[in-house]
Length: 176
Ligand code: NI
Image (cartoon, rainbow, N blue to C red; front, side):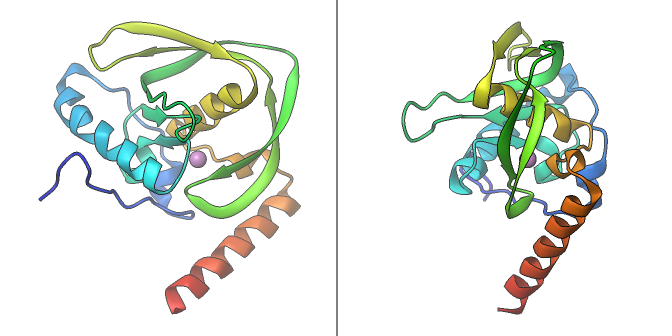
């Protein structure tokens, strides 16, 4: 039976659901969202990963879970209907990966700092801001809600190389 520790299958590129624009979470969605949140955390921690967006588990809702350092100081964050409300002109480049593109990594350049407004499970509004890993993770996860993947920031040459490598590795995995 499904419970809060139920692991959800993570969709892998090129699953078309990863390219959809997700709709905002409404009050009517909260029952489903409250079931989904612990399952998304369980799935993310098991992977392991530091962020997971609802479309990655096939739920086309504007919902993200994050925990940047689960092994050091667990700090689970739930972001409902997150939106970037401010960002720096200064850019920063970090290596990114994604649970929907397993074992693929590339340098991505994004605004160095962002401020994000979001709601919690009780509908209260909050803001979170930061640079470094937090900034990159917030932007990466919010991109998922718009059907955008980190490979979209790469040159087409780099992107195609990475996607071909992923396809090959996924085929080999299935063949085993
Ligand atoms: Ni991702």
